[in-house]
Amino acid sequence: MGNSVRSGPAPPERPPPCSDGVESDFLAVLTDYPSPDISPPIFRRGEKLRVISDEGGWWKAISLSTGRENYIPGICVARVYHGWLFEGLGRDKAEELLQLPDTKIGSFMIRESETKKGFYSLSVRHRQVKHYRIFRLPNNWYYISPRLTFQCLEDLVNHYSEVADGLCCVLTTPCLTQSTAAPAVRASESPVTLRQKTLDWRKMSRLQEDAEGVGNPLGVDESLFSYGLRESIASYLSLAGDGPAPLDRKKKSISLLYSGSKRRSAFFSSPPYFED
Image (cartoon, one colour):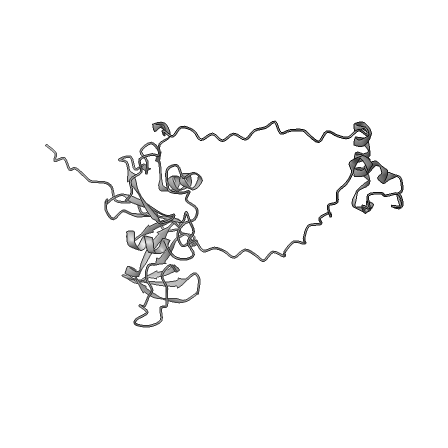
């Protein structure tokens, strides 16, 4: 008679590192190293490092922003996959990184949950940093709200990058995403504007009386009007006649503001998300 073993949640999956050396697989510096109390830091918190080699508890890495190359202990960094999956940091460090000056509303990361082993947490910067628990089903599908499941974390990120769907906001950019400087664009020339004058449209047809402007009673530079425009105005005036156009037309459209019922329907209520 075989012994039945009850296993807990499967450990979080660890995506294989990128083989092409792209920037989406990097180390995130969690704290200044060395400490400013000892010497000026070589690597600063929030810096992104490219791995050169693993030296057993230490990483030999190069900074993607400054180009400095040096060693840093593994306790001072977190391994990052896909640009947003952080391995090796907790809730407090996640909040520190998401509150760095360069981060924007909607910046996010996914990390291992501290309170629920085998699960993930989604951390998002809004007015404050919000944390959502990502549950994992026995079939290895993921969800934040039980009404919507995803086959992989990437599908989950893609969905909430399009709609908030109950989160505090839409996911915008992964945490520590460096904003690339846009190439300098020469300021466009100021658009040509026409000087507005009060025109009597009943007299507009008289613009055609004298091409040299001698009989131009409106004092308008005729060069500002194309030949086609003058022809169009003349045609309109010939059809409209000389009678004064009615100017007392009233607006028939009324702007309506629908406030809706104060009682929120359960069907439209926010999905039950669990903060981690």
